[in-house]
Image (cartoon, rainbow, N blue to C red; front, side, top):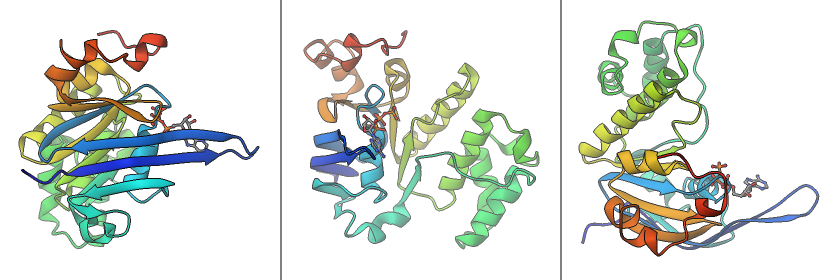
Length: 246
Ligand SMILES: Nc1ncnc2c1ncn2[C@@H]1O[C@H](COP(=O)(O)OP(=O)(O)OP(=O)(O)O)[C@@H](O)[C@H]1O
């Protein structure tokens, strides 16, 4: 069996607010992300997706549970796999007065990647003909694609995107979706979180549904969102207004 790109068992995180109130964000999450293709991490707002991703990346400390990335326990052995992982968990910072290309060239230099790679990643994210425009002139979708281009500079095997289409118009959403699909088709592993069922359905091969910090269902999109498991799992949207139009 191929090694899972990501695996978590019994992952837990409780936050304490400034007023001392406890917020249970993740409560015993068992997540398995297979290697290769696009895996949707689907759940309504506040279900614990960002917290789980931040724990995987060593940005938030887990209270309990185990996690592996490409078989290495994290965060203990994160340095061994960090070079294989690219992530966008918040809006990345670029210099507004520099072109997209110049921003990427600076990054490439910083991480010791040949400058020729910049053209390649601009093409991969459909920014080839806009690389010489200033970053501040980019649309939100183009800014997000430049962020993806930046993560691609080091050719990661695993890409983690937290709600990458938030705030984008339908054209922007489509472009990000196509970029993610292209990466999955190249054999890379893409983990993408979303609260929009229809969006995950359109891009993912496999999906895990999370609700209140727990795994509710996992499998191929056809199994989980199609006619199969979804019918037997009370999807978290059914009780909220967050169920998207499909
Ligand atoms: N730093 C924090 N301090 C206190 N509570 C937090 C903190 N970060 C997240 N939470 C709470 O933890 C729960 C899970 O939040 P999280 O952001 O992980 O969910 P999410 O599924 O990513 O939601 P969204 O789609 O809205 O980003 C929520 O109730 C949230 O309010």
